[in-house]
Length: 50
Image 1 (cartoon, rainbow, N blue to C red):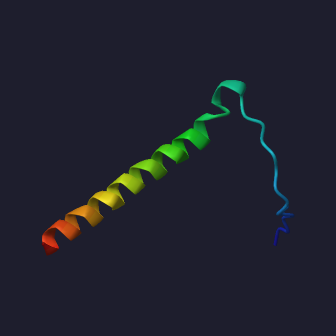
Image 2: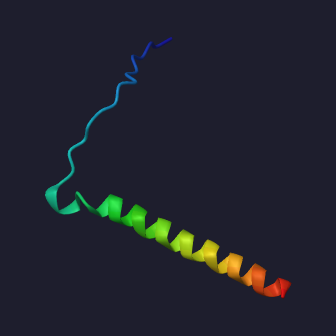
């Protein structure tokens, strides 16, 4: 049997300078699309009531 040591401490991985803002902006874009979609579904549901 092999015993392996696994470290659960967080590791900071430096990103290259040109990709540093890509992940937060991508997440913000996905959040905006999800918000627009949910508002659209709400508007569609309300319009079906009247």
